[in-house]
Amino acid sequence: MNERISSIGVVPVIKLNHPERDAAALAKALCAGDVPIAEVTFRAAGADVAIRLMKEACPDMLVGAGTVTTTAQIDAAIAAGSDFIVCPGFDPELVAYAQEKNIPIYPGCTTASEYHMAVKYGLEVIKFFPAEQVGGLATIKALSAPFPMFKVMPTGGINLKNLKDYLSSPVIAACGGSYMVTADLIDNNKWDEIISLCRQSREIVKEARG
Ligand code: 3PG
Image 1 (cartoon, rainbow, N blue to C red):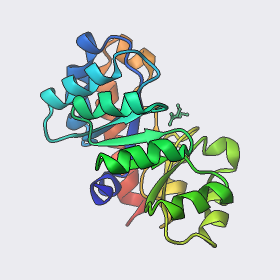
Image 2 (image 1 turned 90 degrees about the horizontal axis):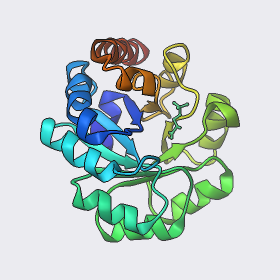
Image 3 (image 1 turned 180 degrees about the horizontal axis):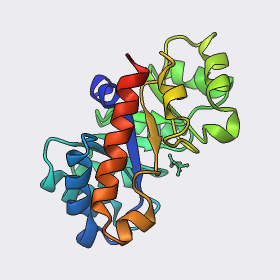
Image 4 (image 1 turned 90 degrees about the vertical axis):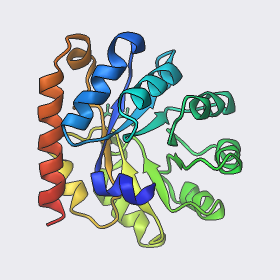
């Protein structure tokens, strides 16, 4: 899982208000844009429905659940066919629960204390949120000195302008962001624009990694 996410390099962070209407079309657009992955956030009700519909539309794509804050959401995500779980912060109960259920979990860690917890739970990849607001790549690099065992998935304030800087660092597994799947793009069915933003992002992944 970690290798596949890392090879794609970008993870669209999605809030779908109308999963029945938009999930399948969005999944197809992401795959057409060579970004066959999504983090579907539980910020909107029906995230599990969206996950199921996206997997049905594009069975080979990776679809994870984001903004997960309860074990009930982990259960709903697993029942919907979710490939992974992402949390904004580090909740030991959720990490242990996901590990018990054998589903990869990427909890948010932005402090040395949270990195300590990630060591304790044997994690290899952690989310770093909200990346830009807590110091961006400089903070990630500083934390990676004492904690070189982690690859990091930053999200929060990442876009086409700063994506290359992040991806150029070997500490970064992949960058998450909503810039290629904004509410405006989805609600107005701007699938071609989403495809184009995905392709531009993939170009940047390739440039950054040589
Ligand atoms: C997340 O949940 O990971 C972030 O809200 C994504 O941040 P962005 O909207 O700034 O890309």
